Image (cartoon, rainbow, N blue to C red; front, side, top):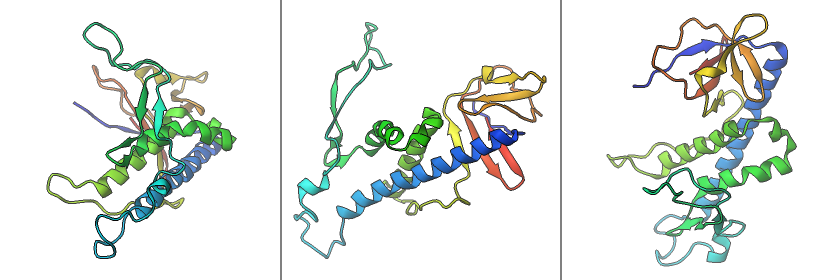
Length: 226
């Protein structure tokens, strides 16, 4: 069973500046990664009556230009076989192209390291928060391109203006991240932000574990959904 509860945040002025900065960085990264998807998608498609179905819209060498064709695993995988050995191991090489389709989620997640090198401000953002941005793009684009069980697709994803990108997510939180600060206030300990005071109006039900936390900007302030 899953349950979600929202708590009002009471960030300090310094924390508020950081939270706003993180949200803006996430928004920019979302739009950039979505743009990458669209550029490839639109360059490889055309109306069915515009050209022969057997002809490539652009030369094959251009379709995969600047896209790494393979990736090398940097550590042993978490999943193990019956003998307890990792199924995938450090040094294993995998293709980034399957049946002609680019594995964009994998490529974009791996490219986040380059993002931090090119744009140092992204080093101030928690890695899991940044990874979640790519996962959001994957979800939005998959809903657009892949029909559901009824054969329906969702609308084309849109680039987000500052008023429409309202949240960022910590994919791995824990009950232990709910702490008390030096002033005995109940806080949520968020990586790269610190212990943010919150209105803890409802305790975590017995037997439940905190798994994720989404910081949300609402009209009346900031909240975290656990």
